[in-house]
Length: 355
Image (cartoon, rainbow, N blue to C red; front, side, top):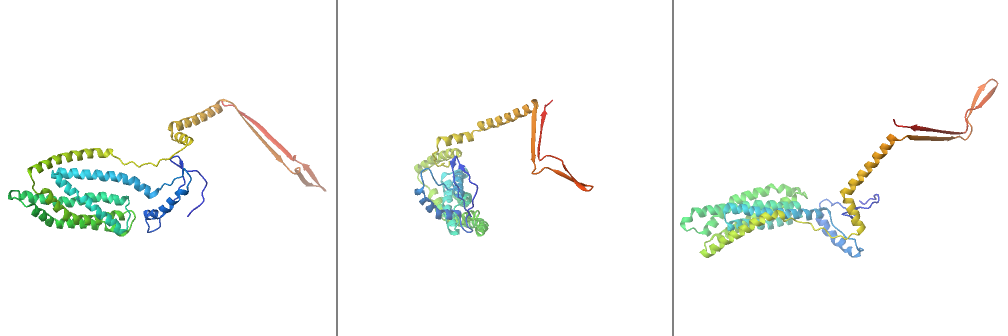
């Protein structure tokens, strides 16, 4: 409810600012409300005078800041996962095949948010990062068993197609059980309907199921296409490409921490007096000098009071409407006596000399 407050001028980043706040109703998301009122607010901009702008804060501002950091974290995690897979399988093809299971699970994450009517909040993004590490496990299970079959039948001119199909059939049950168990564990988050944790649960649950189905279909096919024997020249080019990609990925991984997400601050035009005021207000040296000046003035005042004599003068005045009369009963008559004047002045002087 709007209420009157004491008038004051509020500045944000040195610019005069009026902030309008509101609370979301129960059962409605802030993003949903903002999408409804944003066109109406934008329509008012044409009638504003020069120098006035509108910026959105709250959850939208937090999402812009957090999404940038999470994007860097997601890229870093993908590069780290690729390097681990490359170290384990010693093959660019196999590492890329397993890594391909990550983006196909993101479609399931989007469907999860759509089906549960949840926004893509920062917890949803956190779920996407977590999902990237979970779905890789399914591809590793299939790839490892396929390599095991290929190693056992290497001397018998193995059929890559049959090996890929056998790996998919053999590992279907463990992949299914692990994915369903993990998805069922986050169902209470979705059922609870919390605006904070429901997006995370929706992304993980639907993303795991969707990624499991596509992994069981796509990984065997890609394994067959990538591992089937080819010509010597083609294999030689592939080995050269492996070394090139490995070097590039390692270089990219080393440079990821230096690649940061920078929030672009909206350009604001301020006057020279405002710039001077902001500079003075943020200058710690000037503030420290002012504090030292006040402290020195207090010390000087205290020193003077301890050296020089101090004179104290007190003055008071009392005015009465009538003269104060004292009446006394005695004998046959009454005796009256004036005990003071109607106007009374009192003053005194005190001289103090420190020893």
